[in-house]
Amino acid sequence: MTEFESKRKFTFPTAFTILFILLVVIAFATWVIPSGSYDYDTEGAPIPGTYHPVPANPQKLLQSALKGPINGMYGIEDETGNVDVWNYGELFGAIDVALFVLIIGGFLGVTMKTGAINAGIAWVVSKLKGKEKWMFPILMTIFAIGGTTYGMAEETLAFYALIITVMLAAGYDGLAAGAVILLGAGIGVLGSTINPFATGIASGFAGTDISEGLIGRLVILVIGTIVGIIFVMRYAEKVRKDPAKSLIYDQKAENEKQFMSGSDASAEFGEFTGRHKVILFFFFLAFVVMVYGVIPWADLGLPIPTWWWWFPEMTTCFLFFGILIGLIGRLPERMLVDTFVDGARDMLGVALIIAVARGITVVMNNGLITDTVLYWAEQAVSGLGGVGFILVTYLLYLPLSFLIPSSSGLATVSMPIMAPLADFANVPSYLVVTAYQTANGLVNLVTPTSAVVMGGLAIARVGYGTWWRFVWPLVVLLVILSMLVLAVGVLI
Image (cartoon, rainbow, N blue to C red; front, side, top):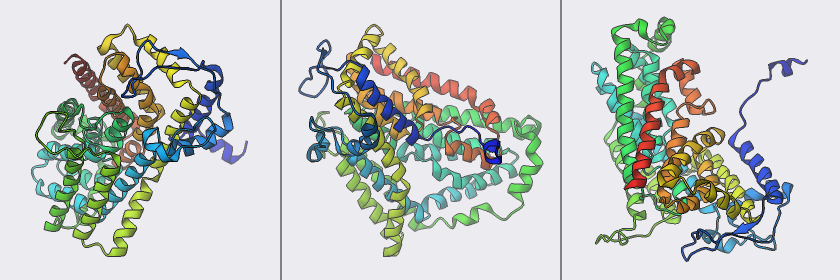
C-alpha cells in the first residue's frame, strides 16, 4: 500500500457529483419507468384523475449526463432534440435564476467591499463591552436578519475571532461565542422570509410568489430566534457562573492564550462611519423594493400599484443597488467593476448547480416520466390529508438536505415534483417551499458537509461531537416549531 493510499479516507461527494450521478440514474430510469401524462388546466396544474400512459421516450445515459445541464440552463428539448431557446422562460429554463444569483453575488461583493457590514457589527460589539450579556440577543438578531434576507453564511466566518475574544474576556467560552454566530445566522436561513437563494429560487420553480407564506415564515423566524437566544444564553450564563460546566473547559487556558493575547480584534473592521450607515440603509432597501415588486397587490384587492416583478426585474433591482452602493462607498470605477465581477464569480458554483439540477428535470420531462412519478406519489399520499402530506414532505426534505446541502440545488431539483404534488393534497405550493427551506436550514445547522459549520467550529476550536452534544435539544425544538407552523398553515 502506497503512502497516498494509506492516507486516503472517505469524503462525502460534492453537490455537483451527486447531481451528475442523479442525472445518469434518472436517464436510466426513463428506460424502466412507464411513460405517462396528466391533462393540465389553463394555469398549467395537473388535473387529478387524468393520468394516462403515453409512448415511451427513453434518454441516452451519457448524452443526458453531459448535455442535461446545458439543456437545463436553456429549456426543454423538443422531439427533435433541439433546445427551444426562445421560449425558455415559458418552460423550465434556469438561465434567469442563474443570472439572478450571479448579480446578487456582485451586489453582495460590492457591499462587503465597502466594509459597511463588518464595521457595523464590530461597532455593535464595541458598544456592548461591559454589557456582554446583551450581545446574545442583539448579535443573534442581527445575524438572523442577515440569514433571512440574503442567506448570510460564509460571511459570518470573519466575525468569529472578534466575538470569541470579547466573549472570553467576559467569562464565557468559545462554544457560546460560536453559537451566537452559527445559530444566529443559521436560524435566520431556516426561517428565510425573502432569502433569494432559498425562498426566491424555490418559489420561482414552485410557481408561487416569494410573498406567499410570508406570515408563517416570519413566525418561524421570530420564535426560532427567540428560542435560540434563550438556549444559548442559558448555557453561556451557566458557564460564566461556573467555568467548569463548559463543554470545552479542558481548552480554557489554551483558548484564552490564542484569542486574548493580541490587540483589539475589532480594529481590523475599521470605524463605523456615516457613509457606512447610508450604505446599510440602501442595502436593506434593495430587499424591501424586491419584496414590494413581487407582491401582487391588485390580486389582494389593495389600492397599491402592482409592478408584477419576477426574476428579470429582481435581477435589475440588485444590479442598480449594487452600482449605487459602490458609488456611495466611493469605490473607484475599476475597483467597483472588479469587485462586482469577483462577487458574481463567487456565486458561479451556485449558478452551475442550478443548471445541473434543472438538467435532471429536463431529462425526466424528455423521458416522459415526470407525470408517472407524480402519479405514484399521488397514490401514496392520497389518504394522508393536507396535514399528513406537509409533515411527510418536511420529513422527506431532511435526508434530501443532507444528500444535497446546496439550498439552490435542492430547490431546483425538487420543486417541479413536490409543488404539483401539493395540488393533489389541496395544500398551497408555498407551504412546500416553507417545508423545504426549514428542513434544509435545520440540516445546515449540523451537517458535517457544510463548510460554514465545520469552518466556524474549527475557528472556535469546538469539536463536531461537542457541537452535536450542545445543539441537539435546540434542533428538536426547531423541528417541532417547523412542523407546528406547517400543520397550522394547512388548517387555516
